[in-house]
Image (cartoon, rainbow, N blue to C red; front, side, top):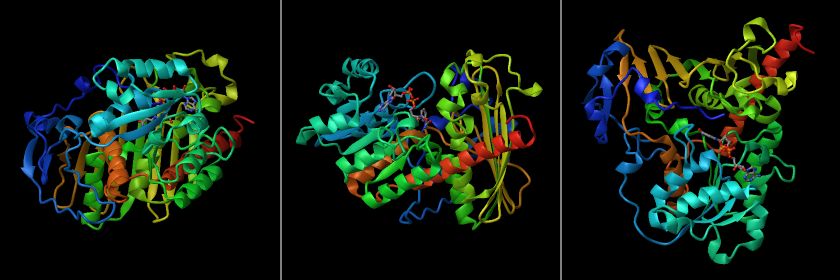
Length: 461
Ligand SMILES: NC(=O)c1ccc[n+]([C@@H]2O[C@H](COP(=O)([O-])OP(=O)(O)OC[C@H]3O[C@@H](n4cnc5c(N)ncnc54)[C@H](O)[C@@H]3O)[C@@H](O)[C@H]2O)c1
């Protein structure tokens, strides 16, 4: 379930950007309110930070790069760049639920070179509706010759040589990918047909067995295709700043503590409330925070995961504002209201996650704390208005760091295109398929352990 963002969500945030934030950041400039507490955020100011950047280290990322689409140099005309888009839904074409919309970012990255040669979706009506909007707009040239196919093999069968894609953008439901079974094995079909094409794949990587997802990861590694998975929060500048602080100070993360408190009142997709359809809120939604936890904490010892949940049939689990007829979902498939998990990282550090289906209204409350010797790095609201509160040695106050005009969705799109055009490694790809499968494995382990604990307590068979 995507994060729902209400119309006024940003306005309601207590932090308002200083006028300086409208100005694109120059390299080496960070925004910070020295010794600020949240109530003193209005006093944020620009100041120079000594931002040593090891630009040539693979995987390094410049937290000061300009990522907003409207601040980019306009894309130049040139050779066609063919894209096949898989899935005509929200992630690829946008919705009022959030800022995601991959096609819009592709248009701004590639400009007149973008040619969407095919749109794959079993719902021709949905695909046609998405194309109609595009064809009535200034991006007509990218979509005027797009052909809709119900399946990827149909495209391969009918493709003319000049339609060979440079990139394939996958935003279909995870139930149809990441597996060995025919019809759910999209990746196999992609690399067989196009062993040299760049591939973007949305999270979560699958809804099937974790070991099958790992074997798909092996296939992709062997194929040599450049692959990027949509854990876009990794591309946030504040997240990269956190990585930079940890690296530059040679810190070992001691603990991560993630909290994902969703506002459920307007979550009106019945499937989201049904574990048999969406795999439940940890696999589907908290996956972003499990991924961030791993990004900071490292590999998780899966055997160490412990978890408890508050279930729908327990007295504290009654929710008054569920907007769907939950009684239509079999009792065993109804989602937990709360899931709390802890685990050990291989480094010995401890991780924890609380996911809650609890708030009313629109705005979610999402935070992750990362602790290291002398340091507290507290990332707040990474989806809407990311802020990093940092406490470091020598100062009992929290410093506040935020960046204006950051667009992690654009960064992940842009970086994959760079890799395709200029060669692997030309821009950091921050989420590989194999790494994304490890996050998938963690989310399933949390779900399984919480269900096991419900059974152990005799609450359920
Ligand atoms: N990174 C993020 O923040 C974020 C946000 C939203 C969605 N997502 C992810 O994107 C994926 C899609 O979500 P969505 O919100 O766009 O869903 P959606 O239901 O809006 O759209 C899915 C589309 O895929 C089509 N489809 C179904 N089966 C297909 C198949 N076999 N091949 C091709 N198309 C098929 C459907 O007809 C529909 O048009 C999910 O994995 C979701 O978790 C990620």
